[in-house]
Image 1 (cartoon, rainbow, N blue to C red):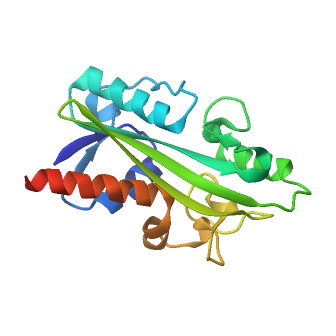
Image 2 (cartoon, rainbow, N blue to C red; image 1 turned 180 degrees about the horizontal axis):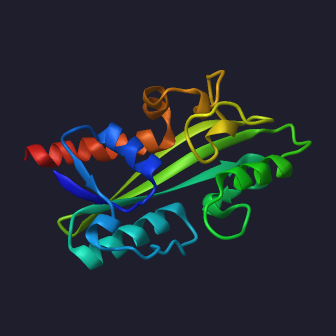
Image 3 (tube, rainbow, N blue to C red; image 1 turned 45 degrees about the vertical axis):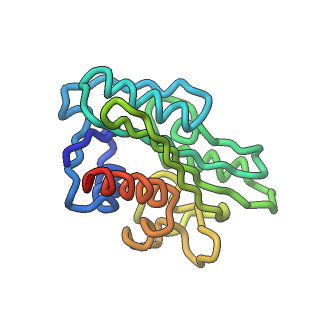
Length: 195
């Protein structure tokens, strides 16, 4: 089954392809002729996921899905949240700058509780479906690990002794926010494919 995933992030694409498995062929917006930046102007993760999926669907008419992910830190009132990819300000998505900004803002704060949340919007045969995945954890005091992307080096999931960036892809995908949301998406798509 071919489906468009509204991302041009190669890390995210590989991670999601691994979760969905060989029964699905993911196409990127660029492969469908969409080269412009897809807007992310909604105030919620769910809103951004819907906005991006609709953007792809309106231009291609193809089944597609989009996600938006946020890191929500309790002591920062849920920030960076929907602004996670642009937390440090400036152009583009600079993971190192975002992480450094987060650690600066967490200096001297004992409460390190945080959660990652992913919202996925699927448009299949013109109908919208929403899936969500959440993982609780904490922000470490310094980065650890060299795998993963985004905030992975400073997020330690609940019940684990290592950050996402210290885990194998399989280990992370089994428990991560995106993994959980995409597993729900995959279960829906597999069931729909069998009908």
